Length: 358
Image (cartoon, rainbow, N blue to C red; front, side, top):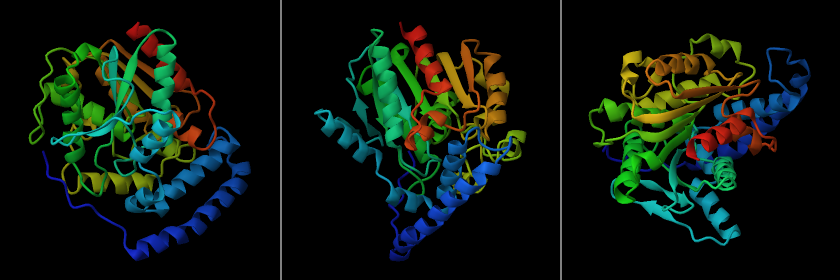
């Protein structure tokens, strides 16, 4: 596995700039409040969602990845608070092979889901990510289905770059299969955005082993893959990028920067951008069932649709659900700003898992 780079840190100037950036954020929110009245059909579906997308875009472009990591709590901190408030013993995992994460539920549950959070490889997971895992877990439990999550806290950029995250993701699956001793038919891989990118990298690696990446031997297909708004292409020339520019939360400048940081000078490939793989690449994919969730209003709508079209040719047990008037990772981002209504994507996710895990 690629060696980890020395951990980066903020300078004093960077920390001062974080404070100064608050003024830019306030200005962006005020602008969104005022401009929301004139957003028209090319803008977000609701006035409040317009404010959310303006705020998120400014956050992504005003601050560097290091500053964003400084501003927000880490996944580990959020998990500790969750355990404390629920009187649970934290169950952190860290191995010599680069596996890092924690358990939400028992490793002995009937099914184990591995969750890779999104954030452009630059931002840590949020409370909304953990809340989504818990919401799905509770929904399944009410139907007599026992699912535990292993929540991966892979290394973020710029502390390390490709292929470190890919290697850690592969080792995480190895940990579940070998160390925990779970059968592939009991394992679900799930992720949003960059996390879904890692899921697809693993899926590719199972049938097309990548050089310099840990060996992964999976004799039988995994139970399921759940891909939420998968970051499937770094190319910004897709029609949906322009069509949904004023509807989505993603900022094109940030996408370009974060993808460049992740690549770190490496050429792109089918493990990095799954949409680049020829359709035959996905023949014999080692997964029983696949669910792809996307928002109608997201920049990635067209590349996601193109990938699903290719993937379904050889993998008929694939379900593609498009949330009407929903943005990129709507099930994650909207609850962060207080909009906790059940999205079409979350409803579909619960129903789909119930039907396949019963």
